[in-house]
Image 1: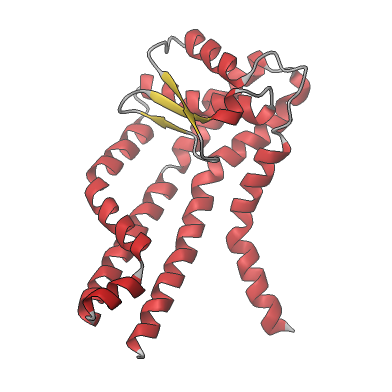
Image 2 (image 1 turned 135 degrees about the horizontal axis):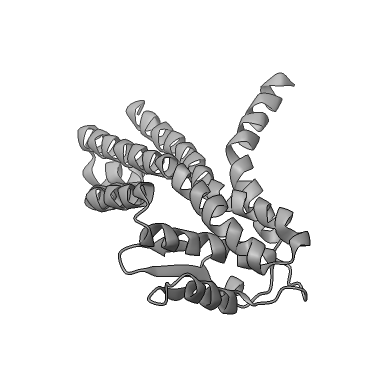
Length: 232
């Protein structure tokens, strides 16, 4: 029984942050008549209020892919959130605008994170390609354990860089959520919904942690395949 429960517990701990983030997003993504704005209207208003008229909103098709890009001063927000009067929509938009405010104020953790991403972009692209392709096809194509090992090491470094950057950015994420976005929400959202907004903002800050844990799981699977190849 213990042999069954322990793996299940491990799987639960690995996936819990990701499941938690998705649950919070979906739970508070119901349209509410009391909300004064749809997502797009709210984004335009607070960008104008914060003197960030140059920041552009870019609709996104993929869920959980909201972001702020310091390079071209753009905010990517899911299409669904832009068209909804929900706590998730307003909170996520406020969070991403929080990053734009950080950029405007030259907030060091944001600038440092962007520099890290720029410096590692080539290596991350190569590592990501190797991970996408997988160890099996690489070995099948080259028939070389040495080259497959080199590819595995590059993939390992890629994962380490991704995990480091994601963990490094936690301070930046929590600052965007609670020092930048929360004051905006308190000014624009009915007070009875503020506690729910805090939960969404917390989930927004934890998105990178959830992604990092999933990366670790992928890394374990990646090396498991490689070890099987060594035993052939």
